[in-house]
Length: 324
Ligand code: ATP
Image (cartoon, rainbow, N blue to C red; front, side, top):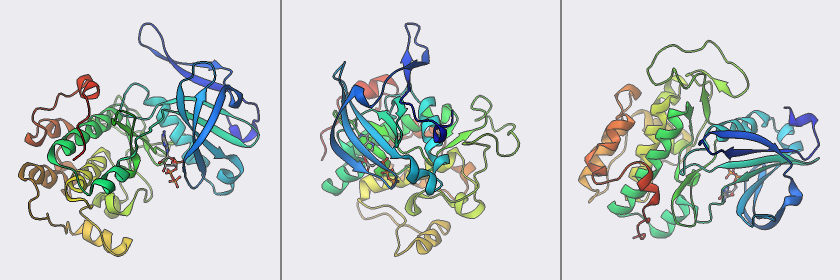
């Protein structure tokens, strides 16, 4: 379906049937089915609005994208990647869910989970830094979400506290999949075996990325060195986030992007006084230049920093800790 040539307000919807299978069903949802409310934020090509389904009264965030602007700025590929990745990531509480997409003459509409707690970055800025308990909780929810997307063959490539949203109960909802990479075959991936050749269809890449994506402070050394991102690149960013939650600032930060890249490539960072010992050990095993030597997800879960965490469903049912 090429929305560049269509104008009708027809949408599709993700549904989970009685057997637990997720199905995409065509339903006629459109602009008229929602009451639009306050503006939640603005992106370069989009406005995100709070909205309520007139029928069910359920609240959503609707991302409205301007078609002409996207085409003019050559961002069609990224919009499609965002839609395609979110459509693959519908079974995890830690990822913003895409419920419907539709369009009219002017705009594309993505109907998403409402993350009314805002960005983790905003919360962190208000607090200055987190204590160990909060860092362990938010770290665990981010890791659980990253493990899920990796298991579905998706690398985020731009993990950072701005892209970690929080819902009303202050649980994690990861967003911004416009620069994600869809691995050619999620089944095959992870065992380090074959790669499909070349660049496949739109938005689907093999395990080699082609260009710089991401944010300077969280970008991995392999991306800078070899223009190659892999699952472990998300774990580098995860290490940067753990550091930042406790220290109040990211490990690699300089006056400009070039100098930040120099620091990353030289692994030039230090821990502030009083940085917790177990967290330091974890960060040191994640901020490792060679991606193959970075601690894999399974070992991160078992690291002593995360001791006592109930992984899986109960993590998401738990009451989130009071911020301090
Ligand atoms: P850019 O496109 O420039 O990279 P962006 O990725 O932040 O910016 P959007 O995804 O359109 O652009 O988001 C704009 C703002 O809306 C964000 O800063 C975020 O705080 C807010 N926002 C996005 N999605 C949601 C959501 N599901 N719930 C609540 N707020 C959201």
